[in-house]
Amino acid sequence: MDEICEKLDLPKTSGYDIVTTLVHTGMIHVAREQKQRYTIGLTAYRIGINYTNNLDFISAIDPVLKAFSREVGKTVFFGIRSDDAVVYICKFEPENPIITTATVGTKNPIHCTSLGKAIMAFTEEEEVGEALKRMNFKKHTERTILNQEAFLKELEQVREKGYALDARELEEHMECVGAPVFGQDGNVMGAISVSSLYKPTEDYDALGRLVHEKGKELSRLLGYLGKYE
Image (tube, rainbow, N blue to C red; front, top):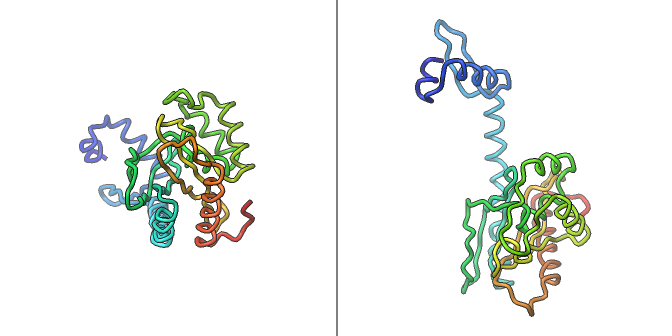
């Protein structure tokens, strides 16, 4: 314990409380020898293995995302939710890409991204409620959703259509369309999106239906056998 507190520059009382909690939850294992020794616990191991296993799906969806990007001639993303943000896990661009600010590994807010809306629309209600408590409805453009009521209304529309729009809500010049991707267990595991410079002549609803179909294809590829509207 002394060594842990020293390395982390923590007061002993704080260090003891944190480690005791982690031991209780199984995140840390304590070997009660002459001098207590702490190692990774079973819970932490299971979480790590589960995360690694989940990442195996990337190799399955990569070719589909790459081909889809070529097909639509736009940038294609796959993202997952991380608390009140979305993280970009994959990105594929056409031969002559429009530069986008999002890169693999970066985060953007849920409330103003098509990925975030697509994921949240098909997330369990209780989990959505918990996430809403932590969400900061920051204004990015004049079109950004700025409160919970408007956001929840937007999610209803996403569920009805099967796809979500970022109608220049994050960046003034960019329009994005996203749709959910479900895993074998029936839960939404992420979302796919198509991003490009905004064009008044673009039919974004038609693009949304196309993205929805691609999300359905990816879900089937990942073993989802449930109903996909």
